Structures are given as C-alpha cells and as structure tokens.
Amino acid sequence: MDRLPKTFKDIVDRQKDLKVLSFFLVYINKRMGELQAEIKEEKSMIPVKVRKRLGIKENMKIDGLTITKEKVNCGKPNCKRCPHGPYYYAYKQVNGKLKRLYIGRKLPEALKPYYREKG
Ligand SMILES: [Zn+2]
Image 1: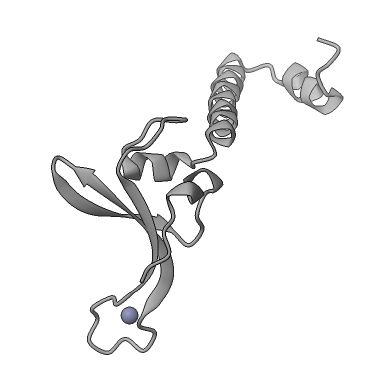
Image 2 (image 1 turned 90 degrees about the vertical axis):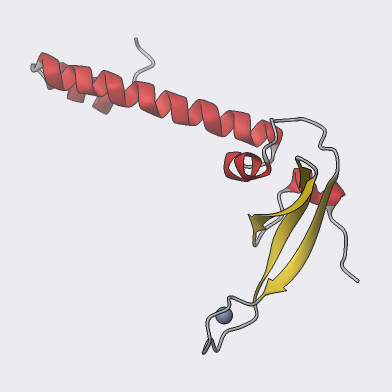
C-alpha cells in the first residue's frame, strides 16, 4: 500500500462513512473500466465509437470497406455554410446493400489503408 499517493490515503483514511467509502470503490471500478477501454482502444487504433458505427470488431480485417472524404449538403433551405465538411465516410456492404457510414473529420490511422481519393 506504500504506492498509494499520500493525498489519496489521507482522503480515504479520513473518511469514516462506510457508504461514502463504498462510493469510492464504485468510482475506482468505473475509472478502471474506462482506462481499460482506453488502452484497448489505443491498441486497435480505431476508436470504439467508429468501430461501433462500422460494425467491426477490434483488430479485425475489414472486407469490402471503402473510405472516402466528402463534402455534404445538410438540406436546410437557407444554409449559408453548405457544403459542410469534408468528412470521412465508409462505404460498406451490409446485408447486400451498400451503406454509407459516418466516420468524422479525422481518419483513424488503422483505417487509412481503406481510403480512396474520389474521382
Ligand atoms: Zn448546410
């Protein structure tokens, strides 16, 4: 327990309410979960959010994926900022249909091999 930072120990030792201490535990568990997810995410390089959107598992070879960079019209009648972007999109076959899935303004390193310049 010598590795614990002094302020952390002080805060915990000073706390006499068991219920509050149990909240500390819950919080630490939550933090550990987040950190583990971050570490996993770093390894796979494709952010969890993007993976979910593309329906892919980490470190998995992705078949039939093409990524493009596009400017898009939002469809609002008097928009002065159109077109928006450019944003990266992934084109992927899902149940026999070609779907366009939003990635974002930045292309994750791991997805770069799938990028094709348009035109
Ligand atoms: Zn617009």
